[in-house]
Length: 194
Image 1: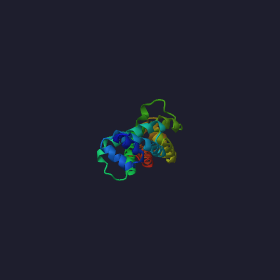
Image 2 (image 1 turned 90 degrees about the vertical axis):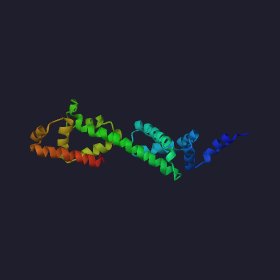
Image 3 (image 1 turned 135 degrees about the vertical axis):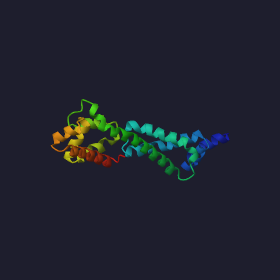
Image 4 (image 1 turned 60 degrees about the vertical axis):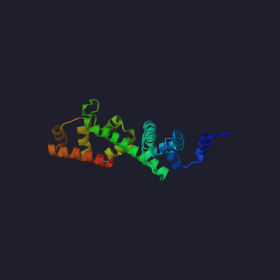
């Protein structure tokens, strides 16, 4: 004969996500396990479809479940999938902000001595930790007007001063600053940074 608790746990497979989330809000850890079993593949697919590298997907999924557990008391009984995907979107936003900060460090790559070949943008891209944005970054760089691409590469990749850029590009120092600024602004806009 089954105990009441065992019967409840065996019936859990038939529970809706909303019912499991209500049980979870009552600190039922087995409800979390059931939700995890149902949602793991969906969350992985969600993150992969949004360009997250496979090496980061597991961390993001774990962050989602941690947030679900920590915010379990905030679940209001609405659509369970909307609540879970809302948390996934929030975690994805945090992930992208962290990786955007790394992208912003491109301007500081001047201290890396082995990045001096302007035509080898590929080497710059390989230094960027945000693998999920690699293709977007490559396309964005290739879409820059040539004068801006050259100015950005001289400043970011080679670490040249604006005076040196102006001498190489045969323009004023102010124009060199403007080309670098516009190039970086276009990259930020294209990559939806800041």
